[in-house]
Length: 498
Image (cartoon, rainbow, N blue to C red; front, side, top):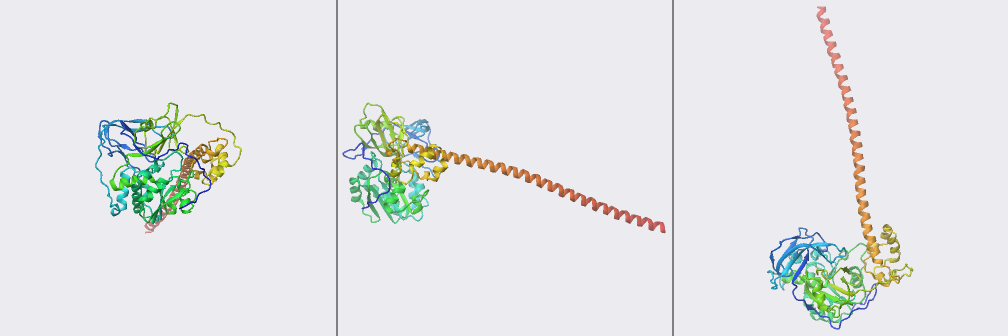
C-alpha cells in the first residue's frame, strides 16, 4: 500500500457527509436539451431536423473534425427545437442545442460491440468504438478519450484516477462500489489498447468500500489497486504520477511524455460500455449535495436532463440557492437549475446563499506558498498578476498553475488568488496573440518595403543594363556603318581609277 504524498495541498473535510453511498436511477426526463458545443472542439452540426423522431443512442449531431466526438440522443422521442440555450459554462454564454421531447418508450438503436472476448479485437477497432460512442473525460476535463489513446507509443503504466479528491463529490466512489466488474474490465480494455505493462487504480484511503469492491473483482496480475492519502488535490495528473510512480513531469509536459496514460474511473467504465457493447455515452452518475439540500445523493441520469430533474429528488430547502457545477473548489457557478446536465457534470452543489467575507490586503503570511501543490509562489504571482506584469508571472511558472484554489482556501485575507491567476493567463495569451499579429503585420510591412525597394533597384539595374546595351548596339551600328561607308568609298575609287 502506498503512503506517499506530495508537498503542499490541503485536507478539506467533507462538508456534507452521508452514511451510505448510493446510486439512484433517475426517472426518464420529459425532455432533454443537448448542447452542440462540446467542451473541446468545434460545434457539431445537427443530423436531424425539427419534427424528426429519434431513438435512444442515435447520432443526432457530428462534426468533420476527427478530434471531436458525435452527440447521441439520450432518450427516444421527437426533436422539437434546435435553438440557443444557456449551458453550464463559466463564460455564461448560450449555445445551440437540440431539444428532444420524450415519448416515454426509451427505444434504443441497435448496437453491437466487440463482446466479452474483446482481447481479440484490434486496437484501432476499439478506438473507433470509443470515438463513435462519444466518450470524453468524465472527471471534468472533457478531453476526447479516443484522441488521448491514438498514436500512443512507449507507454509503460496506465493510471486509473479514482481519487475524487474534491470534498462532497461521491459519484466515482459510488461507481467503483456498484460497478467494480465493469471498471476492472475497462482497465483491461485500456491495457490492450495502449500496450502498457501494468495498470494502477488509485483510490483515496477514505473510500474503503470502493477498494474492497475492486479487490473482489480484480484477478489480473497486471492491475494493482493502491490507496493514497485523502488530500486535495491528489487527483491532478502530475501529482498522481508523482505520488504513485515518483516521476516528476517537467514544466509544460504531460504524463504521456514520461510513458504514462491517465484516465478517470468513470471514463474507464464508459469505455467498457463502448467497446464491449458499443453502447454510446447517454447518461452519467451525478452527485447532488450542498447546504441547500436535505438528502445528498448520487443519481444516474440521462444527459440533457435539467439540473432541477435530480435536484428536486434531494429535497432542497426553500432558501435562495447558489448553484455550482463540479467541485466546491474548481467548479463553475451556474445561474439556475434549468441548465442541462452534460458529460462533465459530475456534481451539482446547491448551497444556501451566504455573505462572502470581504477581501483584505495581503499580509505576506506565506500560507499560500505552503499550500500550493505544484510548488509555485502564489504570493509573488499575485503581485505580478495584479500589476498585469504577465511576462514576469510567466517567468515564475504561472502556466503550471492548475487553479485548484488551495491558495484561496488558506488565505486569511480572502483574496481570490486563483481568479487573478486565471485573468493573468488569459491576458498573457491575448498579449502574446496580439504581439504575434503585430509581428506578422510588421514582417509583412517590412517585406513589402523590401520588395518595393528590391523591385525599384532591379528596375534601375535593368534600365541601366538596357542603356548600356543600347549604347553598345549604337556603337556597333556606327562601326558597321563606317565599315560599309569605307567599303563603298573604296569601290567608288576603284571605278574612277579605271
